[in-house]
Length: 274
Ligand code: PAF
Image (cartoon, rainbow, N blue to C red; front, side, top):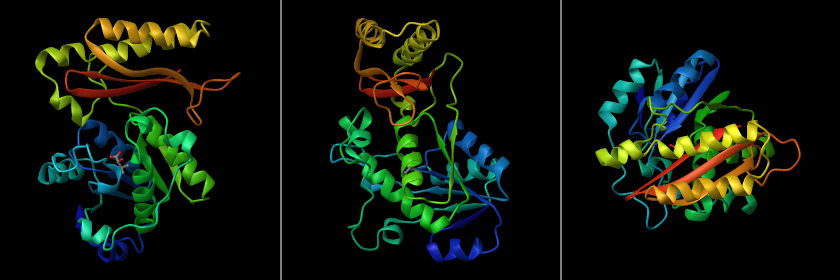
């Protein structure tokens, strides 16, 4: 795997790369990220990954400074799954002047669910992803369904701005008990880790109820939140939404159930398509 710290080095290396698949990351990679790379590998001649901890998507109370940076281990993971090029710029390379131009998702997609808890987050994501797309110029880009709202924002951005990139949503990788893999799972105590799969179990209960014809979404959502509360969680939301723009469901739209809740000091998110 070739490692590039500058835009010019990456662009030169990609001059004759054929069909390019790209998977952007912020590092601290786990098997969920590896599965994005494997998906990318199957779809293109050249696979590019990036590692960049993007200050723009962190709020003032978020953990930008203590975000885990595990570059050596990440390189080993990316090499093992057959990534050809890693783009790992520093902040001066990607933001040589303070960023003044931004990609702003519409409020109805930005300020709901995760965006309501992290104002400005999706503007930061949409801006850096656009910039990375302009640098890598991929044919395909892979994103995990674990961050469902992020995937939705990027899909809609690419569509509305006519970016010539196919966005691939990759399935969430889970532990045996159903817990979605996430860098944040490392913060859970052993007791919390045993409890953590309950969020997935609650979402699954809703999926089954809806598949069996229950359309009383508000009741299903409230019951799941109450059960989480009783088990010591602090739920932020459990909601059934449409898959296209995560608004409340209407008619025959494809649906997804999304949940976010704190277990001790750790906030977990998960979702399941219905
Ligand atoms: O999902 C992530 O790791 C980040 O939000 C992304 C897409 C790499 C943008 O910084």
